[in-house]
Image 1 (cartoon, rainbow, N blue to C red):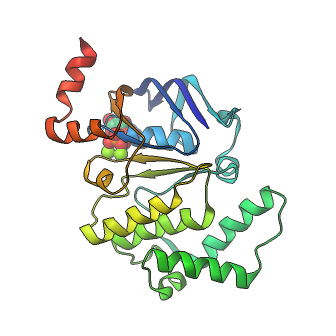
Image 2: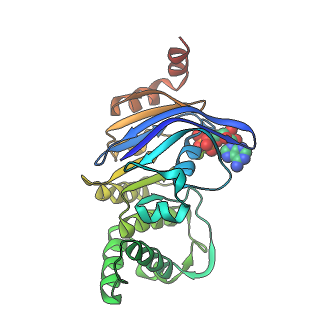
Image 3: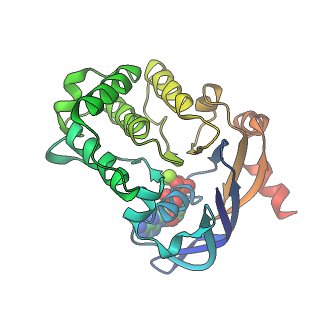
Length: 250
Ligand code: ADP
Ligand code: MG
Ligand code: MG
């Protein structure tokens, strides 16, 4: 589904990613871990097509297509979706309208008509109940006065409604209490399917107790220096990142 080859990225002439390779197949959940400033958020931002990053070398194929030839909206419509690490506030725009507009844009790109209102309401009610979100939440302006936990739930709600092929979630666990984290994790688990892949960026192992990854990658200094299964996350939790660095330098 996703193939990142020898990716080099600079931000304001500073090298951030330095030859990163990553392959993700449909049906898989991959966790990217690594110390602060390693380039984790940069990787997901570049895949999603955010501005401000210069790709100086390398390729990214999404379902065989070169994503550097696709605009950010095209990537989202193709099913490549990044949640917001620090979701922005959009004053005056109701959450539910934004969800509906995003869903209809996606349908239009597939040549489908707009979703009928009753069908949309049913879908959104069902998914927000799954995320234990109060229906009144949908009528509020996007992220205006949302708590940290509400923003994260909303991010997963968006994924549940839009059903992307590749869902990228950056630090979805940061700032959540244990109950909120379990709700978020169960939302992510319900996204799992044979035709979808999930890329989880996380600094901590605890989320992975609730979302079991197929692969864990350690990103250090702009490259993936080690990959393994879920046991690797436990080892990182116990031993930190230094030993991986020493190993990769040797
Ligand atoms: P991580 O998510 O692993 O903590 P990031 O991808 O956010 O790391 O950042 C990697 C490095 O790139 C950091 O040193 C950070 O300061 C730098 N960086 C990221 N975005 C920008 C930016 N817009 N301008 C300047 N430096 C940036
Ligand atoms: Mg960071
Ligand atoms: Mg980050």
